[in-house]
Length: 609
Image (tube, rainbow, N blue to C red):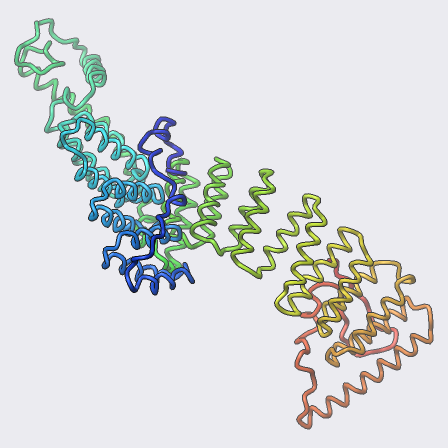
């Protein structure tokens, strides 16, 4: 069962029971809708338009159950489980529906699909095993083997769950009913070493099992002989040489004295219990370390409703504890339990994948795949981490596919488009990186979004491809589209400043003029004017241009004073598009000094991109 079978043997993994379970993604019923119930389309449309509408799914599934329409129900349930495979109760409903229509084989298949999707579900395993008991032919000699095989796979998949006691007890009771006392002992040997909620109850029942049956019936011949030898060695007694008695139990025929026989049996029982007492004591210690965490789990099943913060905190602390103190198998089981309860929280899936990186590459891939394709199809971080993981493994095409597929699912996320660009850049595909940014500029839904991508494209062309003319052209075109975007001017100035200032003087002055004479707020126009004077003071080649720039700046200051006076009389000082602060306009590029203009007193601060 996926990651939950990592601790199974290869024979168990390849057994007919496991291999007979089809993949949930590959099972969809044929849509024969000609005679669907009259209200079906109304309910179906709701979930088709919004698959995350869980309430809509509940109404749809209730409707098809009430109508008892098999084809409609199959279509609804199959689609539902592609989004919510952890809803074990609905797997049971689906299987029951098939059974009501006498489709035993299809009902069995539904159960197996459910167990593949949620192998830790003790309830679903119990329902399935009861289904097998009800439907298999009791006369068939293979029936018991089939049921036992189901029990074995159940305890392998879910038996280490802290709340798996009902499953173990059911297995023990069934073997008792079959009269297989040795198998019962073997089951107790396993459960008494597993920290579960009813650990003490199991030990009490084990002691009753020992007291109510003869040791030779509880142990395998090898175990029985070994135990007798151990006791004989301790007591210095090798048994009498008398011939076996007709009425004595097999295995202790050499003891002819009834009193010695009773003593021997009691000694064996005591030794068996003593051995298991040691197991119990160790297990009790392990249970005590986990009890508080388990008590804190109030909702171990899946639900779309958010978990309380205390629940999330408890899961995080429990996982940290198990990672530090538990075995790999127990850590995996706890993660699997966690991602059932917390399936819609990407932090836990990411933590699970990170943990698996030190244990299994395929395990990491499987965790990411489940998270991204089923439970969190619209969460960006887990998708980007999956793509980064595949890139680390050298699977570049797979990384591309993951990012592209997610971007098609959730449109307009800049972080995903930029991750696609950086992926291509890292692997030398500069033309594709440029194309992705050009496409983003072209398809932007607003001028602000277009300008954002234009700046990114400019940096790529300028810093990576070293194509200064092309980068300048992109920014100039962006300014024409978005004349009030301060960041565009800042980035253009930064780019021009980074080259030969003497050679770029005219381009720099042109940029300043665009900003000063454009439609920016008076405050920003003054700032750019101030920087123009500063540039000419520090790097200009013509004093006349410096004096003209200074006069222009003084004119703007007078205009600002005039606007202030008007504002005092009820006029608005700033344009509606004026930024709240200079700093907010200078997240990248050149930071501007907004102080009072004084000739020759302005400084320049460059911020590297």
